[in-house]
Image (cartoon, rainbow, N blue to C red):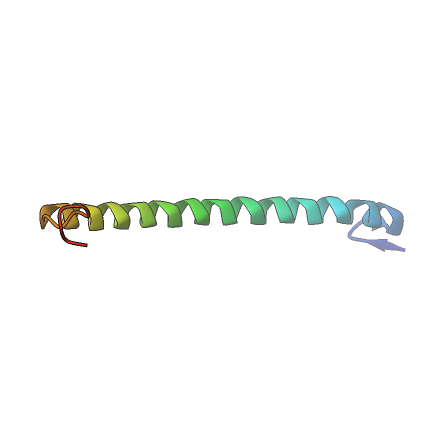
Amino acid sequence: MRILGMSVPELLFTVPFLVAIGIAVFAVVMIVRLVKAAERTAAATEALANEVCRQGKMPGNGNQ
């Protein structure tokens, strides 16, 4: 019996590699999304810190 032009043992041998490739692609996509989220968080934190500095409300100068 042939499926996709391969016999059953060949197909069973190929499946783990296809699963591994899928997991690797998923991991890369998730890492890219995590890096983008970290960049957005850093930019927001920097903007907030700049605004706090501009208003002169830095911790340690009596504004706690």
